Image (cartoon, rainbow, N blue to C red; front, side, top):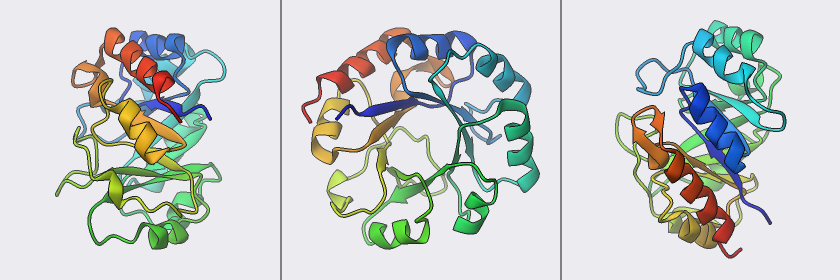
Length: 207
């Protein structure tokens, strides 16, 4: 099985172009103002206007207003929504667009039960728990906390880099991996060499 790759936190057309050229399956656009990787709808339009076919456009939100999601979708025709806050399942599903629900993994959290609450999601994005941060911390978590019987596809995130993504895939066997800070030169600015190395690490993983 080929492990899919999403590269998140895209803020520049040239970074999107690198992602597409090396074979990333999806790019993530962040609509959460506290994030250093946040883009406004105008900048996002510049990016997706140049996006080649067959690359999924994902919009990331954290406890957004309905109007925020609707405005982004109207302007960008997002393929997938990604929710990183405390959004209930009914909210995530109300837009009629497939969605991922992110969950910050920590000991004691029942991921099977969590997946059941969001059973209509396309998958669970598993990230590291850091108090006060909804994601994007660049930290890994204990992959042994992921049960083998999750009923939804797993998108593995949290501290992935070119150096550890192969091990992560071989250990967790996720449907997809999601990276942001692990392929950056600076916050919001991607590094083309790191992106290429990350993709090579994915392809070299033994699954």
